[in-house]
Amino acid sequence: MYALALLLALVLGSAAAHKLIARPRLARATGRLLHVNEPLALPAMLAAAAIEAAAAIALLIPATQSLGAVIALMLWLGYAVALHLAHLRGDDSFDCGCNFGKSRKGIDRFTRLRPVGLGLLAMLVILYPGAPDVIAPFAALALFIMYLAAAELAALPSLSRSIAR
Image 1 (spheres, helix red, strand yellow):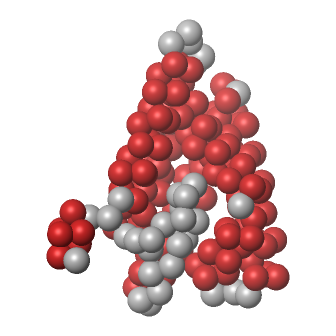
Image 2: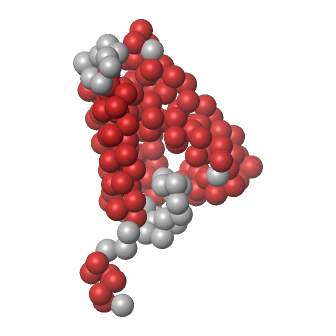
């Protein structure tokens, strides 16, 4: 299970870095999701990046792995709620900043379910914390690459929409 903790640390660390690198884009997305103006959205986004970074670091240390997973679970549940509320109010056609590239599809089903799935993985780490081993970093890296590939595939326009145009 340590590989799973490393995977979650990679996801959280890359998300935190993404928020720092693409600050203007993600501040706008945060403002839209939280229904606040950009001057208030920027500190909220930076706070989320700090929490992601702290959870990622905690997941790397066996003694704090469960704490990191709990923080990650709470964070992903918060993201899931914010995304779902945006969808319910019909405000889901914007780029939520959930991918590294700009999304043209808005907040689709994959985007809304991704934090739920990540939260379920965090629950596994909470229930079954693991000790470091030699294979874990390689397994985590392979899983992270598959995670990124799934996000890229989900961002592609659907074939039925492409044919209809």
